[in-house]
Image (tube, rainbow, N blue to C red; front, side, top):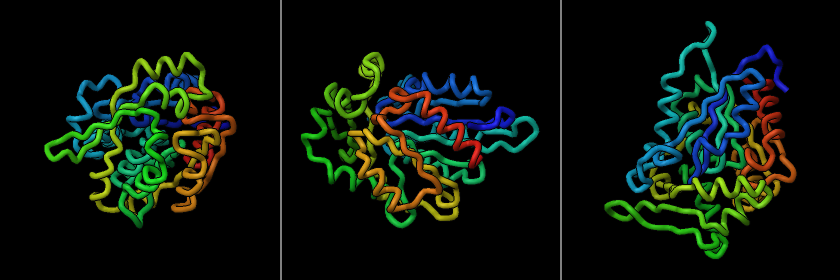
Length: 266
């Protein structure tokens, strides 16, 4: 666990369809340990009132994170470097932030998250995931094309998908919270397939830790391990008995892991 005298700034980034609300168990625990914590809603997520159908690109979707990093300032007389934590699709927002602000990030934590490489289009790890997922595995999740040329695709998780793939080991109350607050999101696959590759100088220069959730049925362990093999992380942490929502399912253990990571890498 991090030394109590070491103060870190954690920025916690949610996954598709979710919002800053999903960190409600982890944020106070990190703060109680003496650290600064920023949670945010990406575009058309959480309490951001825009519709996902108003958001054309992953860059536009990730702009709230870029705004926070762009405005970060020295803390206690020292140049502040943040610990970025991205969950699920939040890994793409992390990668964009790392590419743009590598000098402002001490370590990025991919929490059972999509982790791209610097050799292929940003969509590569998502394309492989989608291609390996049979249509019936989405369990009624609603997909709807949008945009002038119908190149966007919104995604609203079904109740069955959330119950059996996302929150299957999480407390029933947290599933109910998720069912109440989940909103349509997008994986922006068409946009990401046309975006230039992430750079070694930017994204590739920031230290990365991958947290494997071994009972994740949404992004299965096999795909998590493949992403790590595809673009090796500096460190890998395994979470046993943890579903796709570690911040709900196992918040105390996740908090301990985040503190350890910050202590080692920040």
